[in-house]
Amino acid sequence: MNKTVAERGPKFRRRAEARPDEVLDAALELFIDKGFAATRVEDIARRAGLSKGTVYLYFPSKEALLEGLVRRAILPIADSALTALHDYEGDPRIVLNMVLTMLAGRISDPKVMAMPKLIFREAMGFPGLAEMYRREVLDRVIPAVEGLIRRGIEQGYLRPVDPSLTIRSIIGPLMLHVAMAELFGIMPEGGLHMDKLVENHLSILFDGLSAPPSAKQWSSS
Amino acid sequence: MNKTVAERGPKFRRRAEARPDEVLDAALELFIDKGFAATRVEDIARRAGLSKGTVYLYFPSKEALLEGLVRRAILPIADSALTALHDYEGDPRIVLNMVLTMLAGRISDPKVMAMPKLIFREAMGFPGLAEMYRREVLDRVIPAVEGLIRRGIEQGYLRPVDPSLTIRSIIGPLMLHVAMAELFGIMPEGGLHMDKLVENHLSILFDGLSAPPSAKQWSSS
DNA sequence: TGAAAATGACTGACCAGTCAGTTATTAGTT
DNA sequence: AACTAATAACTGACTGGTCAGTCATTTTCA
Image (cartoon, rainbow over all chains, first blue to last red; front, side, top):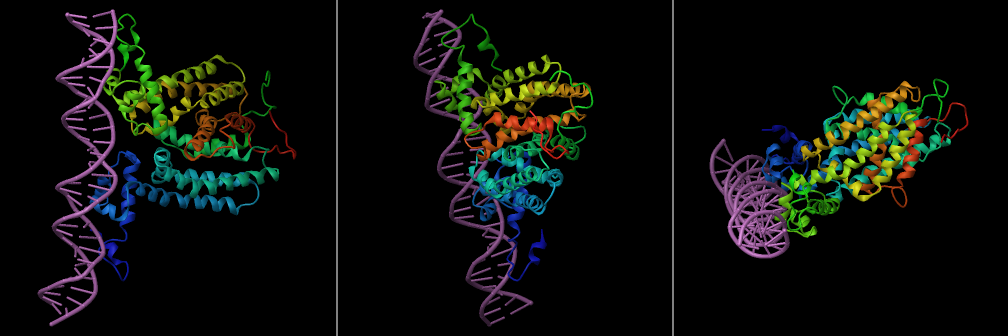
């Protein structure tokens, strides 16, 4: 089947070595459209061109498959976000713009989008998964964003707000947008249009929803 | 589904009548802390003081239990939100403030909070549930909010934004706040403090994150 | 007494994880 | 090159456990 594996190195056994990744690929596809519980290990094996037993040579349990998957897909994204957040000095709105745009782009890839979906669905049933995600992603990203907002306030770019709570106002809309589309099929004509969403959201986030007092009626408040 | 038994009064035999609601109460408690899949119908029956078979006298399937539950808990909330949204004319910010505050209050009740949690977890596995929620709640609430925003723009209260996308910016943060707390235990010291969140969020939502161009701060509400 | 209400043992289906056995690959020997 | 261990990689039937849903029987009460 795949000779490619064999061209690796000196000590090449039969066709091991690349297997774990192949298994994860298969697991990802199936978890995406059936969810974790409804996916049988046998199916994962078949899709990877293996038998069930072989999967258990590489992963100790079905849950380990899930953890390995999330770790592999999420960490790179968290890393690029962190880099962007740390490297920048100056107007935080520019960084936020960049990060949200980057996030929106990444999320358009179904393989990436599958991750938050999986985590949300399964976190409650598998505390180990939730803890790993928290440790590896949230505990690093959240303080970075909080710091960004705090600095923005100190330097006079932003109004004084609670940095911690404000994170919800920044990220929440993206999440809800994806969730509505994913769970209920509610989305703009013809696709997610993450770019449109981010544009609309950022304009509200930075400038607010209120019309400037100058314009029109501002009668009874 | 469970129509006949509960609604007619005249023919009451042994101690039927209140049963469907009792079963739902029991199911709710168990679903809250074990999730749908991990809860056995037998456990629900026991907690309601019944045997498994009796549950099936009132509900045709385990899934019907879930649907009944969600319907019972969600509709009243959607109704009050809708009433508020329809009854009000004038500055939409006042209505939004009211609705979000109401929502925040309701969500503090664990029995209510359990609902979005359940729906998000199970919607994908039970399309019927997702569809029901969409039909009964989202398809009524979303157009109402869109209308509110549109009117707000027309009457000069709000800046011109995309009403449809703006809904994400209004509700998303609440959702993320609850999700972070629920899934990862990330929340403000000492509790959800939905009131604080709503206050911070509304100030951003209406006035934006940006400091006014003229040097000094100028706190809003 | 008779029918509605309730029961719980039972069935059939499902599936994670195991393990005794099979097949492919390599190293060693001639 | 051919033949032979030795062993790494893989297989899939099987086990043990779980549970949704059924239904023949029993209980309750009008």
